[in-house]
Length: 494
Image (cartoon, rainbow, N blue to C red):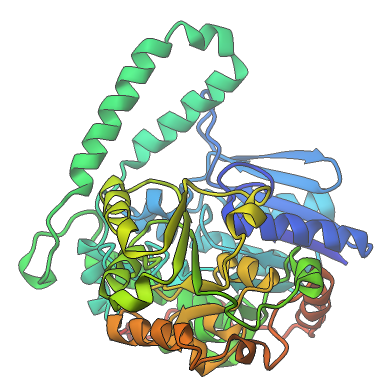
Protein backbone atom coordinates (compact mmCIF):
# COMPACT_ATOMS: atom_id res chain seq x y z
CA UNK A 1 0.00 0.00 0.00
CA UNK A 2 1.02 3.61 -0.48
CA UNK A 3 0.41 5.38 2.83
CA UNK A 4 0.81 9.06 3.62
CA UNK A 5 1.49 9.90 7.28
CA UNK A 6 1.02 13.47 8.49
CA UNK A 7 2.42 15.37 11.46
CA UNK A 8 3.22 19.07 11.56
CA UNK A 9 6.95 18.25 11.65
CA UNK A 10 8.90 15.39 10.14
CA UNK A 11 9.02 12.44 12.58
CA UNK A 12 12.63 12.67 13.74
CA UNK A 13 12.86 16.46 13.96
CA UNK A 14 12.89 18.60 17.13
CA UNK A 15 9.40 19.52 18.23
CA UNK A 16 7.83 16.24 17.11
CA UNK A 17 7.38 15.12 20.72
CA UNK A 18 5.77 11.82 21.67
CA UNK A 19 3.73 11.74 18.47
CA UNK A 20 6.98 12.08 16.51
CA UNK A 21 8.50 9.10 18.32
CA UNK A 22 5.38 7.07 17.59
CA UNK A 23 5.25 8.21 13.96
CA UNK A 24 8.92 7.47 13.38
CA UNK A 25 8.40 3.94 14.71
CA UNK A 26 5.22 3.55 12.66
CA UNK A 27 6.86 4.70 9.42
CA UNK A 28 9.81 2.36 9.85
CA UNK A 29 7.53 -0.57 10.69
CA UNK A 30 5.33 0.09 7.65
CA UNK A 31 8.39 0.23 5.40
CA UNK A 32 9.67 -3.03 6.93
CA UNK A 33 6.31 -4.60 6.06
CA UNK A 34 6.79 -3.60 2.42
CA UNK A 35 4.59 -0.51 2.27
CA UNK A 36 5.42 2.72 0.44
CA UNK A 37 5.42 5.57 3.00
CA UNK A 38 5.14 9.31 2.39
CA UNK A 39 5.81 11.70 5.29
CA UNK A 40 3.97 15.03 4.93
CA UNK A 41 4.44 17.99 7.27
CA UNK A 42 3.31 21.63 7.35
CA UNK A 43 3.21 24.69 9.55
CA UNK A 44 6.75 24.64 10.92
CA UNK A 45 8.91 26.04 8.08
CA UNK A 46 8.86 29.58 6.69
CA UNK A 47 11.12 30.88 3.97
CA UNK A 48 13.07 34.14 4.49
CA UNK A 49 12.50 35.02 0.83
CA UNK A 50 9.32 33.76 -0.86
CA UNK A 51 6.04 34.05 1.04
CA UNK A 52 3.71 31.86 -1.01
CA UNK A 53 3.12 28.26 0.14
CA UNK A 54 5.10 25.61 -1.72
CA UNK A 55 6.05 21.95 -1.27
CA UNK A 56 9.63 20.68 -1.02
CA UNK A 57 10.11 17.01 -1.92
CA UNK A 58 12.97 14.70 -0.98
CA UNK A 59 13.70 10.98 -0.78
CA UNK A 60 15.48 8.74 1.73
CA UNK A 61 13.98 5.70 3.46
CA UNK A 62 10.72 7.65 3.16
CA UNK A 63 9.23 9.90 0.54
CA UNK A 64 9.13 13.32 2.17
CA UNK A 65 6.91 16.28 1.35
CA UNK A 66 7.30 19.45 3.41
CA UNK A 67 4.85 22.33 2.99
CA UNK A 68 6.73 25.61 3.39
CA UNK A 69 4.92 28.85 4.30
CA UNK A 70 1.65 27.26 5.37
CA UNK A 71 -0.97 29.92 6.19
CA UNK A 72 -1.64 28.04 9.46
CA UNK A 73 1.23 27.97 11.95
CA UNK A 74 1.94 24.85 14.00
CA UNK A 75 1.88 23.76 16.74
CA UNK A 76 -1.64 24.79 17.68
CA UNK A 77 -0.65 27.23 20.46
CA UNK A 78 0.78 29.59 17.84
CA UNK A 79 -2.50 29.62 15.89
CA UNK A 80 -4.81 29.75 18.87
CA UNK A 81 -5.69 33.42 18.37
CA UNK A 82 -6.31 33.00 14.64
CA UNK A 83 -8.81 30.22 13.90
CA UNK A 84 -10.17 32.23 10.96
CA UNK A 85 -7.08 31.51 8.84
CA UNK A 86 -7.63 27.78 9.30
CA UNK A 87 -11.31 28.19 8.45
CA UNK A 88 -11.05 30.47 5.40
CA UNK A 89 -7.63 30.13 3.75
CA UNK A 90 -7.45 28.46 0.33
CA UNK A 91 -3.65 28.69 0.34
CA UNK A 92 -3.10 24.91 0.50
CA UNK A 93 -5.74 23.88 -2.03
CA UNK A 94 -3.05 23.20 -4.65
CA UNK A 95 -1.31 20.57 -2.50
CA UNK A 96 -3.57 17.51 -3.07
CA UNK A 97 -3.23 17.79 -6.87
CA UNK A 98 0.53 18.19 -6.49
CA UNK A 99 0.70 15.05 -4.33
CA UNK A 100 -1.28 13.15 -6.98
CA UNK A 101 1.08 14.38 -9.70
CA UNK A 102 4.16 13.41 -7.69
CA UNK A 103 3.08 10.06 -6.22
CA UNK A 104 0.07 8.89 -8.21
CA UNK A 105 -2.60 6.96 -6.35
CA UNK A 106 -2.34 7.03 -2.55
CA UNK A 107 -4.29 4.36 -0.69
CA UNK A 108 -4.36 5.85 2.81
CA UNK A 109 -3.94 9.31 4.30
CA UNK A 110 -3.32 8.98 8.03
CA UNK A 111 -3.32 12.31 9.88
CA UNK A 112 -1.93 12.48 13.40
CA UNK A 113 -3.30 16.02 13.82
CA UNK A 114 -4.70 18.91 11.77
CA UNK A 115 -2.12 21.45 13.00
CA UNK A 116 -0.44 23.32 10.14
CA UNK A 117 -3.23 22.58 7.65
CA UNK A 118 -6.53 24.23 6.66
CA UNK A 119 -10.15 23.16 6.50
CA UNK A 120 -10.19 23.70 2.73
CA UNK A 121 -7.15 21.44 2.31
CA UNK A 122 -9.13 18.46 3.60
CA UNK A 123 -12.13 19.16 1.38
CA UNK A 124 -9.84 19.45 -1.65
CA UNK A 125 -8.00 16.29 -0.64
CA UNK A 126 -11.23 14.30 -0.56
CA UNK A 127 -12.08 15.49 -4.07
CA UNK A 128 -8.58 14.74 -5.40
CA UNK A 129 -8.45 11.22 -3.89
CA UNK A 130 -12.06 9.95 -3.91
CA UNK A 131 -11.04 6.31 -3.42
CA UNK A 132 -8.46 6.81 -0.68
CA UNK A 133 -9.02 6.10 3.01
CA UNK A 134 -8.67 9.31 5.02
CA UNK A 135 -8.05 8.59 8.70
CA UNK A 136 -7.45 10.79 11.73
CA UNK A 137 -5.77 9.65 14.96
CA UNK A 138 -6.86 11.57 18.07
CA UNK A 139 -3.59 11.96 19.99
CA UNK A 140 -5.04 15.20 21.35
CA UNK A 141 -8.28 17.17 21.18
CA UNK A 142 -7.28 19.93 18.77
CA UNK A 143 -10.19 19.57 16.29
CA UNK A 144 -12.65 20.38 19.10
CA UNK A 145 -10.30 22.53 21.20
CA UNK A 146 -8.08 25.15 19.54
CA UNK A 147 -5.67 24.96 22.47
CA UNK A 148 -5.48 21.14 22.06
CA UNK A 149 -6.03 19.87 25.59
CA UNK A 150 -9.49 20.94 26.83
CA UNK A 151 -7.58 22.42 29.77
CA UNK A 152 -9.15 25.79 30.55
CA UNK A 153 -6.80 28.63 31.54
CA UNK A 154 -4.12 26.10 32.49
CA UNK A 155 -6.06 25.21 35.61
CA UNK A 156 -9.27 23.19 35.12
CA UNK A 157 -10.89 20.73 32.73
CA UNK A 158 -13.01 22.46 30.08
CA UNK A 159 -16.49 21.00 30.49
CA UNK A 160 -18.41 23.73 28.64
CA UNK A 161 -16.87 25.85 25.91
CA UNK A 162 -19.97 28.11 25.90
CA UNK A 163 -20.28 28.13 22.12
CA UNK A 164 -16.75 29.48 21.84
CA UNK A 165 -17.02 32.21 24.46
CA UNK A 166 -14.86 30.31 26.95
CA UNK A 167 -12.19 29.95 24.25
CA UNK A 168 -11.82 33.74 24.03
CA UNK A 169 -10.75 33.78 27.68
CA UNK A 170 -8.69 30.60 27.75
CA UNK A 171 -5.12 31.07 26.64
CA UNK A 172 -2.59 33.70 27.66
CA UNK A 173 -0.45 34.71 25.94
CA UNK A 174 -2.09 34.78 22.53
CA UNK A 175 0.84 34.63 20.13
CA UNK A 176 1.32 37.05 17.26
CA UNK A 177 1.40 34.93 14.06
CA UNK A 178 3.56 37.50 12.27
CA UNK A 179 6.19 37.32 14.98
CA UNK A 180 6.23 33.51 14.90
CA UNK A 181 6.65 33.44 11.11
CA UNK A 182 9.49 35.98 11.25
CA UNK A 183 11.22 34.07 14.03
CA UNK A 184 11.11 30.90 11.91
CA UNK A 185 12.41 32.74 8.88
CA UNK A 186 15.29 33.93 11.05
CA UNK A 187 15.93 30.35 12.18
CA UNK A 188 16.12 29.32 8.52
CA UNK A 189 18.75 32.03 7.89
CA UNK A 190 20.72 31.04 10.98
CA UNK A 191 20.95 27.47 9.71
CA UNK A 192 21.76 28.48 6.14
CA UNK A 193 24.27 31.24 6.92
CA UNK A 194 25.63 30.64 10.43
CA UNK A 195 28.72 32.84 10.03
CA UNK A 196 26.90 35.82 8.59
CA UNK A 197 24.11 35.61 11.14
CA UNK A 198 26.69 35.33 13.92
CA UNK A 199 27.42 39.05 13.46
CA UNK A 200 23.88 39.80 14.63
CA UNK A 201 23.86 37.36 17.54
CA UNK A 202 24.09 39.95 20.39
CA UNK A 203 21.24 42.05 19.01
CA UNK A 204 19.11 39.00 18.25
CA UNK A 205 19.70 37.64 21.75
CA UNK A 206 18.55 40.93 23.27
CA UNK A 207 15.39 40.93 21.15
CA UNK A 208 14.63 37.34 22.15
CA UNK A 209 15.14 38.12 25.85
CA UNK A 210 12.81 41.09 25.60
CA UNK A 211 10.21 39.06 23.78
CA UNK A 212 10.38 36.25 26.37
CA UNK A 213 9.92 38.77 29.18
CA UNK A 214 6.92 40.31 27.43
CA UNK A 215 5.31 36.93 26.82
CA UNK A 216 5.93 35.95 30.44
CA UNK A 217 4.15 39.08 31.65
CA UNK A 218 1.27 38.44 29.25
CA UNK A 219 1.16 34.86 30.45
CA UNK A 220 0.54 36.01 34.02
CA UNK A 221 -2.88 37.39 33.13
CA UNK A 222 -5.52 37.28 35.85
CA UNK A 223 -7.72 34.18 35.90
CA UNK A 224 -11.13 35.02 34.46
CA UNK A 225 -13.83 33.34 36.50
CA UNK A 226 -16.76 34.78 34.53
CA UNK A 227 -16.15 34.93 30.76
CA UNK A 228 -19.42 36.76 30.10
CA UNK A 229 -18.21 39.74 32.13
CA UNK A 230 -14.70 39.89 30.67
CA UNK A 231 -13.15 41.44 27.58
CA UNK A 232 -12.29 38.79 24.97
CA UNK A 233 -8.82 38.49 23.46
CA UNK A 234 -7.82 36.93 20.18
CA UNK A 235 -10.61 35.76 17.87
CA UNK A 236 -14.36 36.00 18.37
CA UNK A 237 -16.47 33.38 20.09
CA UNK A 238 -18.23 32.79 16.75
CA UNK A 239 -14.90 31.88 15.13
CA UNK A 240 -14.05 29.41 17.88
CA UNK A 241 -17.50 27.87 17.67
CA UNK A 242 -17.11 27.59 13.89
CA UNK A 243 -13.71 25.94 14.38
CA UNK A 244 -15.26 23.10 16.38
CA UNK A 245 -18.40 22.86 14.24
CA UNK A 246 -16.43 22.76 10.98
CA UNK A 247 -14.08 20.04 12.20
CA UNK A 248 -16.99 17.91 13.38
CA UNK A 249 -18.42 18.31 9.88
CA UNK A 250 -15.06 17.23 8.40
CA UNK A 251 -15.16 14.07 10.50
CA UNK A 252 -18.70 13.40 9.34
CA UNK A 253 -18.22 14.08 5.62
CA UNK A 254 -14.51 13.88 4.68
CA UNK A 255 -12.75 11.50 7.06
CA UNK A 256 -13.54 7.81 6.82
CA UNK A 257 -12.39 6.93 10.33
CA UNK A 258 -11.37 8.61 13.57
CA UNK A 259 -9.00 6.48 15.64
CA UNK A 260 -9.00 7.29 19.35
CA UNK A 261 -5.81 6.21 21.14
CA UNK A 262 -7.89 5.18 24.18
CA UNK A 263 -11.53 4.49 24.98
CA UNK A 264 -11.63 7.57 27.18
CA UNK A 265 -10.34 9.74 24.32
CA UNK A 266 -13.07 8.36 22.10
CA UNK A 267 -15.74 9.12 24.67
CA UNK A 268 -14.48 12.68 25.17
CA UNK A 269 -14.65 13.54 21.47
CA UNK A 270 -18.00 11.81 20.94
CA UNK A 271 -19.45 13.72 23.91
CA UNK A 272 -18.45 16.92 22.11
CA UNK A 273 -20.08 16.08 18.81
CA UNK A 274 -17.77 13.84 16.77
CA UNK A 275 -19.98 11.19 15.09
CA UNK A 276 -19.82 8.02 17.17
CA UNK A 277 -20.12 5.80 14.11
CA UNK A 278 -16.83 7.21 12.80
CA UNK A 279 -14.86 6.56 16.01
CA UNK A 280 -12.89 3.41 16.80
CA UNK A 281 -10.23 2.71 19.43
CA UNK A 282 -6.70 1.85 18.30
CA UNK A 283 -4.09 1.72 21.05
CA UNK A 284 -0.74 2.83 19.66
CA UNK A 285 2.28 0.56 19.50
CA UNK A 286 5.47 1.09 21.46
CA UNK A 287 9.10 0.10 21.19
CA UNK A 288 8.87 -0.77 24.91
CA UNK A 289 6.90 -3.98 24.30
CA UNK A 290 10.04 -6.14 24.37
CA UNK A 291 10.99 -4.56 27.70
CA UNK A 292 7.49 -5.28 29.01
CA UNK A 293 7.70 -8.94 28.03
CA UNK A 294 11.13 -9.45 29.62
CA UNK A 295 10.64 -7.36 32.78
CA UNK A 296 10.12 -8.86 36.22
CA UNK A 297 6.72 -7.69 37.39
CA UNK A 298 6.67 -6.15 40.85
CA UNK A 299 4.07 -7.98 42.93
CA UNK A 300 5.17 -7.07 46.46
CA UNK A 301 6.31 -3.92 48.26
CA UNK A 302 9.36 -5.61 49.65
CA UNK A 303 10.82 -3.55 52.49
CA UNK A 304 8.72 -0.44 51.93
CA UNK A 305 6.73 1.66 49.45
CA UNK A 306 8.75 3.58 46.86
CA UNK A 307 6.68 5.97 44.73
CA UNK A 308 7.89 7.19 41.34
CA UNK A 309 6.76 10.16 39.23
CA UNK A 310 8.28 10.87 35.81
CA UNK A 311 7.23 13.56 33.33
CA UNK A 312 6.57 17.27 33.75
CA UNK A 313 5.81 19.73 36.55
CA UNK A 314 2.70 21.01 34.76
CA UNK A 315 -0.61 21.58 36.52
CA UNK A 316 -2.41 19.49 33.89
CA UNK A 317 -0.08 16.56 34.56
CA UNK A 318 -1.12 16.71 38.20
CA UNK A 319 2.27 17.67 39.65
CA UNK A 320 0.87 20.40 41.90
CA UNK A 321 -1.90 18.03 42.98
CA UNK A 322 0.73 15.37 43.74
CA UNK A 323 2.69 17.73 46.00
CA UNK A 324 -0.51 18.74 47.83
CA UNK A 325 -1.41 15.08 48.30
CA UNK A 326 2.04 14.14 49.57
CA UNK A 327 1.69 16.92 52.16
CA UNK A 328 -1.54 15.30 53.34
CA UNK A 329 -0.14 11.78 53.76
CA UNK A 330 -0.26 10.52 57.35
CA UNK A 331 3.16 10.97 58.96
CA UNK A 332 3.55 7.26 59.71
CA UNK A 333 2.98 6.42 56.02
CA UNK A 334 5.21 9.19 54.64
CA UNK A 335 8.13 8.57 56.99
CA UNK A 336 8.43 4.93 55.92
CA UNK A 337 8.47 5.48 52.16
CA UNK A 338 10.79 6.76 49.45
CA UNK A 339 9.74 9.14 46.67
CA UNK A 340 11.48 9.51 43.29
CA UNK A 341 10.61 12.46 41.05
CA UNK A 342 12.10 12.97 37.58
CA UNK A 343 10.78 16.22 36.07
CA UNK A 344 12.52 19.22 34.56
CA UNK A 345 12.66 22.15 36.98
CA UNK A 346 10.36 24.37 34.90
CA UNK A 347 8.47 25.67 37.93
CA UNK A 348 11.04 26.75 40.56
CA UNK A 349 8.31 27.43 43.13
CA UNK A 350 7.04 23.85 42.75
CA UNK A 351 10.56 22.51 42.96
CA UNK A 352 11.07 24.49 46.18
CA UNK A 353 7.80 23.14 47.57
CA UNK A 354 8.94 19.61 46.72
CA UNK A 355 12.22 20.16 48.54
CA UNK A 356 10.38 21.35 51.64
CA UNK A 357 8.70 17.94 51.75
CA UNK A 358 12.00 16.07 51.83
CA UNK A 359 12.02 15.65 55.60
CA UNK A 360 8.63 13.87 55.58
CA UNK A 361 9.99 10.83 53.75
CA UNK A 362 12.53 8.15 54.35
CA UNK A 363 14.21 9.53 51.23
CA UNK A 364 13.44 11.87 48.32
CA UNK A 365 15.31 11.30 45.06
CA UNK A 366 15.07 14.10 42.49
CA UNK A 367 16.23 14.11 38.86
CA UNK A 368 16.03 17.23 36.70
CA UNK A 369 14.31 15.36 33.87
CA UNK A 370 15.20 12.02 32.37
CA UNK A 371 16.00 10.31 29.09
CA UNK A 372 15.43 6.77 27.91
CA UNK A 373 19.16 6.23 28.39
CA UNK A 374 18.99 6.80 32.16
CA UNK A 375 15.38 5.80 32.86
CA UNK A 376 16.31 2.46 34.43
CA UNK A 377 18.66 4.27 36.80
CA UNK A 378 15.97 6.83 37.65
CA UNK A 379 13.42 4.10 38.39
CA UNK A 380 15.75 1.88 40.41
CA UNK A 381 13.83 0.69 43.49
CA UNK A 382 10.49 2.26 42.48
CA UNK A 383 7.63 -0.17 43.10
CA UNK A 384 4.59 2.06 42.38
CA UNK A 385 4.40 4.61 39.55
CA UNK A 386 2.13 7.65 39.68
CA UNK A 387 0.01 9.13 36.85
CA UNK A 388 -2.02 11.83 38.64
CA UNK A 389 -3.20 13.70 35.50
CA UNK A 390 -5.98 16.26 35.84
CA UNK A 391 -6.69 16.69 32.12
CA UNK A 392 -8.02 13.98 29.80
CA UNK A 393 -4.49 12.90 28.83
CA UNK A 394 -5.11 10.75 25.77
CA UNK A 395 -2.57 8.01 26.50
CA UNK A 396 0.44 9.12 28.61
CA UNK A 397 3.65 7.54 27.38
CA UNK A 398 5.03 7.71 30.92
CA UNK A 399 2.48 5.09 31.97
CA UNK A 400 3.68 2.73 29.25
CA UNK A 401 7.32 3.37 30.21
CA UNK A 402 6.56 2.47 33.83
CA UNK A 403 4.52 -0.68 33.32
CA UNK A 404 6.96 -1.90 30.65
CA UNK A 405 9.55 -2.03 33.41
CA UNK A 406 7.29 -4.13 35.60
CA UNK A 407 6.15 -1.23 37.79
CA UNK A 408 2.42 -1.08 38.64
CA UNK A 409 0.89 2.38 38.31
CA UNK A 410 -1.69 4.29 40.30
CA UNK A 411 -3.61 6.54 37.89
CA UNK A 412 -6.35 9.12 37.99
CA UNK A 413 -9.64 8.38 36.27
CA UNK A 414 -8.98 10.90 33.48
CA UNK A 415 -7.38 10.05 30.17
CA UNK A 416 -6.23 6.73 28.81
CA UNK A 417 -3.62 5.61 31.35
CA UNK A 418 -6.32 3.96 33.48
CA UNK A 419 -7.08 1.58 30.58
CA UNK A 420 -3.63 -0.02 30.46
CA UNK A 421 -4.48 -2.29 33.38
CA UNK A 422 -8.17 -1.34 33.79
CA UNK A 423 -8.08 -2.23 37.48
CA UNK A 424 -10.32 -0.11 39.73
CA UNK A 425 -8.14 -0.67 42.78
CA UNK A 426 -5.35 1.28 41.08
CA UNK A 427 -7.53 4.18 39.87
CA UNK A 428 -8.45 7.21 41.99
CA UNK A 429 -10.73 10.18 41.35
CA UNK A 430 -8.83 12.93 39.55
CA UNK A 431 -8.10 15.90 41.80
CA UNK A 432 -9.42 14.13 44.91
CA UNK A 433 -6.67 14.37 47.53
CA UNK A 434 -8.47 12.15 50.03
CA UNK A 435 -9.00 9.35 47.51
CA UNK A 436 -5.36 9.51 46.39
CA UNK A 437 -4.04 9.52 49.97
CA UNK A 438 -6.34 6.62 50.86
CA UNK A 439 -5.00 4.50 47.97
CA UNK A 440 -1.39 5.21 48.92
CA UNK A 441 -2.04 4.40 52.57
CA UNK A 442 -3.81 1.14 51.68
CA UNK A 443 -0.99 0.10 49.35
CA UNK A 444 1.53 0.96 52.06
CA UNK A 445 -0.37 -1.18 54.60
CA UNK A 446 -0.55 -3.97 51.98
CA UNK A 447 -4.34 -3.84 51.93
CA UNK A 448 -4.03 -3.48 48.15
CA UNK A 449 -1.56 -6.08 46.87
CA UNK A 450 0.64 -5.03 43.95
CA UNK A 451 0.19 -8.46 42.42
CA UNK A 452 -3.45 -7.57 41.71
CA UNK A 453 -2.27 -5.05 39.12
CA UNK A 454 -1.11 -7.85 36.81
CA UNK A 455 -4.29 -9.93 36.96
CA UNK A 456 -4.96 -9.36 33.26
CA UNK A 457 -2.69 -8.92 30.28
CA UNK A 458 -1.96 -5.22 30.00
CA UNK A 459 -2.69 -3.10 26.94
CA UNK A 460 0.92 -2.77 25.85
CA UNK A 461 1.30 -3.42 22.14
CA UNK A 462 4.28 -3.76 19.84
CA UNK A 463 4.52 -1.76 16.62
CA UNK A 464 3.91 -4.95 14.63
CA UNK A 465 0.71 -5.60 16.60
CA UNK A 466 -0.35 -2.00 16.14
CA UNK A 467 0.30 -2.09 12.38
CA UNK A 468 -1.79 -5.26 12.12
CA UNK A 469 -4.64 -3.39 13.82
CA UNK A 470 -4.16 -0.35 11.56
CA UNK A 471 -4.38 -2.53 8.47
CA UNK A 472 -7.93 -3.41 9.45
CA UNK A 473 -8.80 0.30 9.32
CA UNK A 474 -6.63 1.02 6.27
CA UNK A 475 -8.30 -1.69 4.18
CA UNK A 476 -11.95 -0.96 4.90
CA UNK A 477 -13.85 -0.11 1.72
CA UNK A 478 -14.33 3.61 1.19
CA UNK A 479 -17.89 4.83 1.59
CA UNK A 480 -18.32 8.12 -0.23
CA UNK A 481 -19.41 10.92 2.06
CA UNK A 482 -21.29 14.05 1.20
CA UNK A 483 -19.55 17.18 0.01
CA UNK A 484 -18.72 19.11 3.16
CA UNK A 485 -21.96 20.58 4.54
CA UNK A 486 -21.98 22.62 7.72
CA UNK A 487 -24.42 21.41 10.40
CA UNK A 488 -27.48 23.60 10.66
CA UNK A 489 -26.99 24.28 14.36
CA UNK A 490 -23.84 24.90 16.35
CA UNK A 491 -22.73 22.20 18.75
CA UNK A 492 -23.28 23.75 22.15
CA UNK A 493 -22.69 22.58 25.71
CA UNK A 494 -19.46 20.67 26.09
